[in-house]
Length: 239
Image 1 (cartoon, one colour):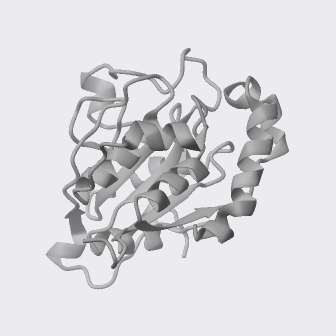
Image 2 (image 1 turned 90 degrees about the vertical axis):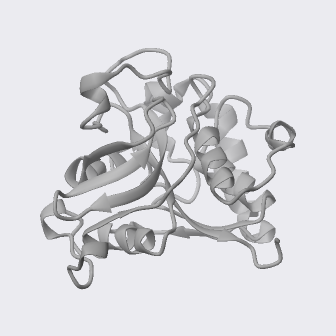
């Protein structure tokens, strides 16, 4: 269906479907580059996963301070969290070599990330090429499941935070008006007001919200690859 916020529909318009929020613990990023890791921590906390070896897991994956969505998928797989990663680009878009956000580490990242995509099937990490519409996101949330979404920081606008507080950390060093990738955890929606609720690791505020139209624009900005991870829960074999 059309992802424009004026056309969002979701089954019967009862009270539950009009407004829904999944309760997820908040986590603030520690550095300018680890928003994605903070989002994974929120998911792991939500499922009460022991993260005592989290730093060691990150070290073994060798992504350093350049964290891509496929890295987050690998971490979730190691913690046996069922998920599905959707993207419009299976690998690295060579066009990003000219973007300031990617330029510094593009050469090394290109090889590493492309290899991770090639190895995903072997590792049992579900990755599919395709664009996700708004209805699929909303339906996922109604099942009390959350999503990790890559957005463009310069487009995403919280209706509360941008007016009332300063972020604890930006997901980058300078405030330039070009693409700046930033991960968030999407936890809910309000259909009547056409809002998306999410956890932003750059803010100490527990809950952020933006319009559905703004969310769609931010997650589909060139640079995001429309990366989105649908989280389903712990694997059945995990107690």
